[in-house]
Length: 107
Image (cartoon, one colour):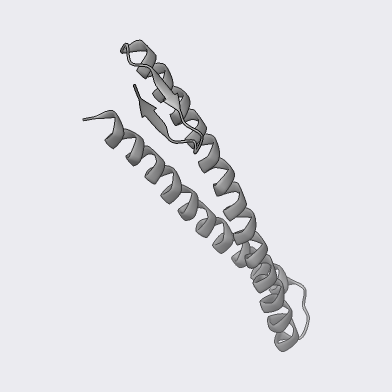
């Protein structure tokens, strides 16, 4: 197993895990909002309409928060991967430099 395969799998796993976690969180939140709307004792039609509006807005907010959080985590993972790649390059006796565009190149 090469280092590139591990890194790619790790990043892919983090992305998939973040997306699945966001979906589960949004689903659980929407269920909770629906239960709260049912407990309010309001007219069923009004409670359903209010719950749907709240759920729609809340789900969109949750998705946006999950997306931002996921982007932050991906950036952190990319930085960590670059640091480890540089450390391993120095350990193996290869000098790894970053060019102006930010991509790594070996000398």
